[in-house]
Amino acid sequence: MNTSSKTLKRWVYSGAMLLCATVAAQQPKAAAATLSNSWNYAIDSFNDGVTGLQIGGGEFEFYGIAVKETSDTAFIAINSNLSLAGYANSGVQRGNINYGDLFFNFSGQDFNTANAKGNLFGIRFAEGNDSGVATTGVYSKVTAKSVTQTNSGFANLTLFNDRVKSAGGTPSMGDLSATDPYFEQTGNWTVMNSIDSGTKVGEINFLTPETLSVLGLNFAQFNAQGSQTIGFSFNKSSMPSGSYIANLFAECANDAIAIKSSFTKESSEPVPEPSTIFGTLAGLSILAAKRKLK
Image 1: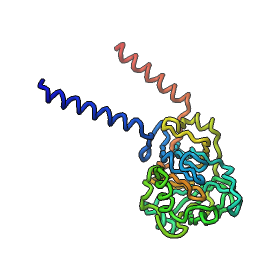
Image 2: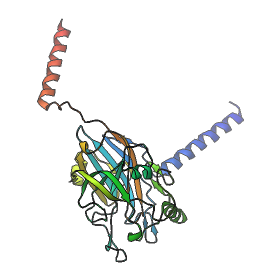
Image 3: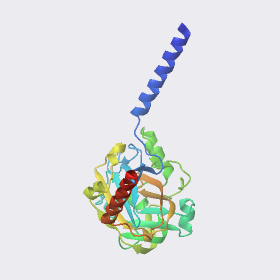
Image 4: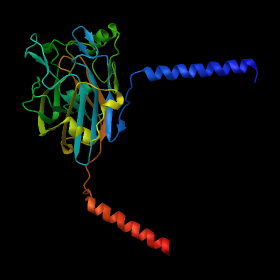
């Protein structure tokens, strides 16, 4: 091998090692519908939560959202630094800034179009927020509103993105880019983050972190380790099957996250009892042994 060939090989090897080191140093990210142990994950930027002068890692940092389904139940998990009790702030109307509501859009339209047509579904899970519906639960025929003005928040997403970038942060929305046209980016008080009206179609059941762990949830595999993991479930009959975009904002729009995923149609066939499964496997083993003897 001549000297130039050796030099070229060393250059290619060094470049590849540098690229690998750069990728390894980057924050782990989950792509759309990243499936792990039957959970679909969307992982947000770890340095785009705005808490006063702090960018990243503060009370309003959202790390990830995950969805899991069985034949009849949907499970939601949120990893962040914002507790269900909210963030105390004497300068806002209620003295507290909380999560907004979780929206599901199955229509294939952008958020504002679906909102104008009443095609959204929503879940109020934070009992102390500014939602326009009376109780926690699942709602259909939802219209959305903005509550950022009364929560000392951002008037629009462009202002939020610019604030994060000016401090060296990286704004994102999980499975959507920070500037995705799915959401209105400009205008006055255009961040639609709370249910305005809707028809209640189901209840939610809160889940402990221990229960979520038993169900296979593991945000830590993406280095998403916020101080709070909030989980709840609901009956899938409350929503249609098919692809959706689900999104969640803080009431002040100081962070947000979205996930692209889908629900399969409810199964009409009963799940076999464990004894039935084991009996079937035993029968197949005996049959296989008889065939081998013949």
